[in-house]
Length: 245
Image 1: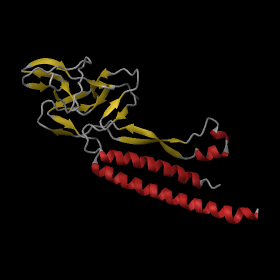
Image 2 (image 1 turned 45 degrees about the vertical axis):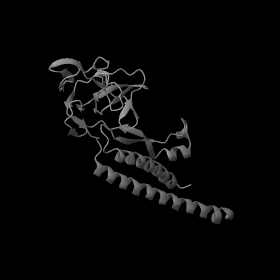
Image 3 (image 1 turned 60 degrees about the horizontal axis):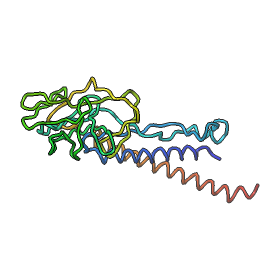
Image 4 (image 1 turned 30 degrees about the vertical axis):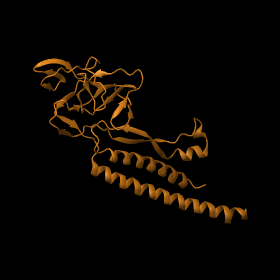
């Protein structure tokens, strides 16, 4: 059997999965704090003994999408005028306490809740550097570059910006919040600066995202046409040549 079929099949799988990722990135290009996902590739491994068979060796010469990895590059900062809108410049995430447990986000669209606690737009408490909810008394609120929250000139708490060990893979939940693996220990980020009166945009450029989506579509269509050609040739061989054997 022509190994070109496997090449076309592996390419088609990779392009269709990459197409889904590109479409998701483009759809969230205007989502505050969104981290774009980039596809990574690996060889196809049928089983531990795949290399001992001709089929396994042939298939493993080609790659498929291994999965998506979060792009941690910086998004643009947009001024809002709200002192409790916070944007992170550098590495790290805000921590929020949700009904499902601790989650992390770059979306700093916060406000003072009815009970005086700093919360997200969904009413979930934002955690301090000490992993506690932040109580914001009535008064004029300012937030410094180091995350210190002050009311009428007096410091009341410090917004936490947390970092993860190198190689930690966060799991997306929704569009701009993430779950850390169990038993992963966070630390306070040492290279992050907080900007008040601003929000961080998605780190996906809409124009580049549109171009990539078009490229992925065309490549997937090319691989699909190649598969159709191989399929036709196989049918021809099966119906015309095999009966002569």
